[in-house]
Length: 239
Length: 239
Image (cartoon, rainbow over all chains, first blue to last red; front, side, top):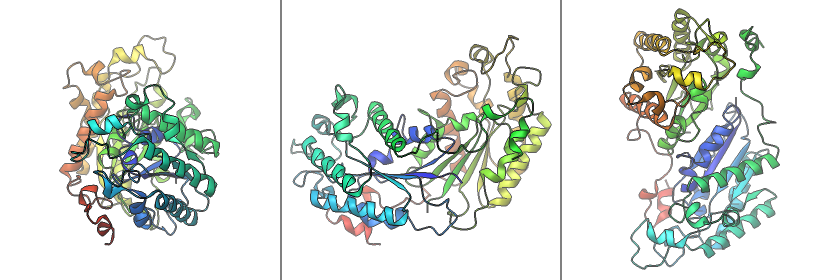
């Protein structure tokens, strides 16, 4: 059976199989070697994620192909909602975010000791975009997320990765290196455009490759057309 | 655990998680209810598919979430390569295609009696496109696939579905109802453009819905954001 890569996160993960989405791109990239499994939960923060860990990743006894290759953990965009603005119910204090991320990593390491865990920081925030495309009534005229707050959560995420000795994609920093990132990479100040999705995809496959998980190394499921002899095609299927 | 929908087929399945691809669209559509699992094998015909069935769909004892919800079986585009042209090694005679499709359906029905099987016919062929974008050396000036041949395989596929009492998407017929289908739906005379992918996606979800497999009916994995009380979010996770 093929190995799996789980994508665990919030709406930026849940919608990652949309047009040009980073999840679909991963599934396409690994189309003959890995099953990319979507576990995105729109609106979720790490406090809620911790509550559902054992449902999202049940301890399956045998049969399910063993430990997954990798799990991406991509939370923080909702934790970073400001506590005094219109999405306050999703806010999680920075210290608790830190603690929750460690709990998620610990759970996964305990469940699957050989699985590569990859943290992804929240993206930067385009505050203008957040005001133009409100998710809820927001008469305050103040965005419910700021780039500065997202940056603090991103730094914490990177620090957790260092502490847990696992890799992280510092998306907050990386994305802001792109010209006009506010509109080029973010569709509504938070969710990704095709450009933004491409950045996540490229960063994820780069980090996976750094950890030894790449197309060159992973076994291919069944003979490729190029390995089938046109003069005796069935030979390839006799093994 | 979430139920699964397997996509079993040739390159039109293998590349279905590319930009705007029908597989990615299915995964996005069912993002909180179904795992869409890619089992596409570029270049494969039904003769080769029959040889690998038990590897593609191993009889897993327990643990793997039980019978899948559905399997799409999407072969015929390679079987329909003409026997006297440059891709002859992929050709499978019509009668054998008929027999092989029945074998695939029988295997799946035996393995998973409750799983919905959905046949998809090969798409129509734009012969001009096939000459403009050859996959191999083709000095003959004759396309290796014709629309007429693809149509014969499509008719056989529909007949097998009727005989086996399972639904079929008659893509060959459906696609030709679209204006300028040759270029609008097919990128190289065979593989799908975003328009072509959209047709497959719409047809598949329609057929699945006809069989009772739709978002309205399938259980959602974990509470939706809209079902979480902003005044007491954790209540939703106490069940």
